[in-house]
Image 1 (tube, helix red, strand yellow):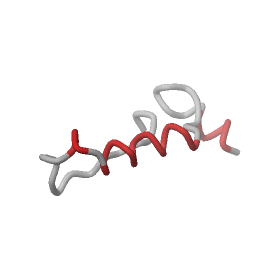
Image 2 (tube, helix red, strand yellow):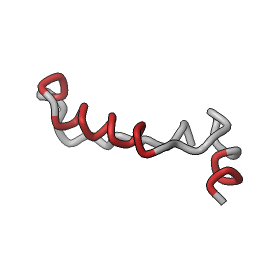
Image 3 (cartoon, rainbow, N blue to C red):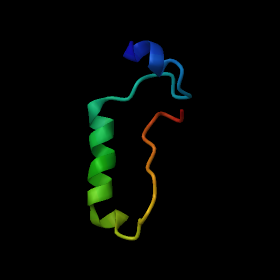
Image 4 (tube, rainbow, N blue to C red):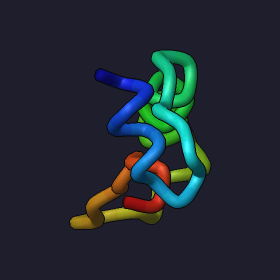
Length: 46
């Protein structure tokens, strides 16, 4: 099912746990300190 859904994204594949974790780490890190009230869509461009 993940492969079928991933094929529908502009990237042509499903994301993996590492990619989701990297987004979370970025949000929790110092480089995102000025980010407020934003929606970070980690969806492969879908």
